[in-house]
Image (cartoon, rainbow, N blue to C red):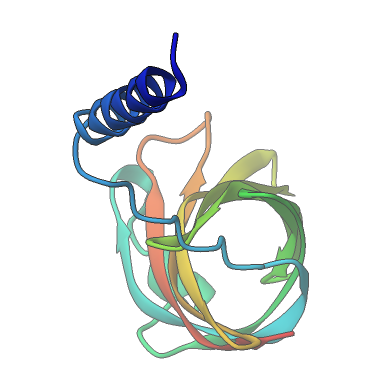
Length: 167
């Protein structure tokens, strides 16, 4: 094959490779970096609302979960790529938090807190939803706390806003 024919063959091959690459659809956008939630946070959370049903009637008022009530909040988070795990301390309870960090939705997580036992009744406390974003070293957003007991009918759910939580 002559030099000219080889050159033409290489140009055709290059054109076909380029066409194949373009035919796979629109170009992909570079993904945004995952925010780094790792660190020790301290701050304050505030009760937005509290709902109760069944045997939990009166629970919210009885324990002080009234709108605007505040309480200290502490988090210690570790992160590996988008996976976030850590510990949380609120309301005198300690627990764990596990979730996913993303550039689009921030940190979404769930968690469990230590059980509370009194007069033969044990309350199980969970964090069924956690949704926060990061602005510099400050976290903002909201989460829910859920209280249940196998000995009681019903539950109580507290909607919480983060007032200030910084590392």
